[in-house]
Image 1 (cartoon, rainbow, N blue to C red):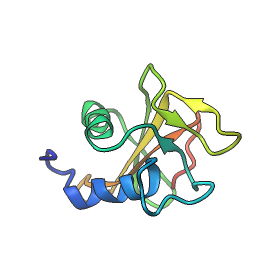
Image 2: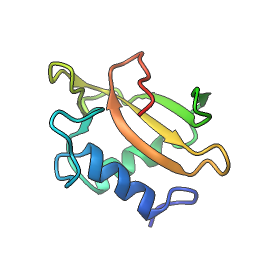
Image 3: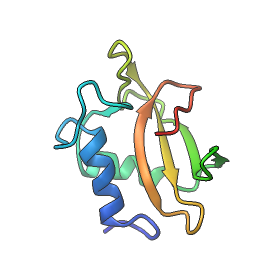
Image 4: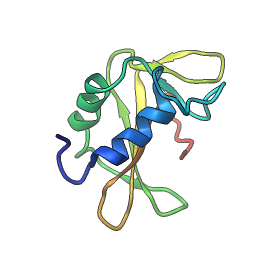
Length: 109
């Protein structure tokens, strides 16, 4: 069970679009690709859900995380990355999406 405010539908969105088992994975994906699926990524998101946020131009809240170990790849050149983004809605801080990113950059999915 996901802790509030991260519901199963929100997590499912991130998995469908940004994991190797995701049925909506684009080729190449619009943002990074997590290695693994399900609990591995869920635990990664849970561990950083209270990280500091910045506000994106669209009003969503962004958490840029350095996990300290390889968690996926970024679509540009397929480079591996240890960084990822958690994007939440400003009204209730509920999960909008999460995806691997290049360390130090925010592309705001």
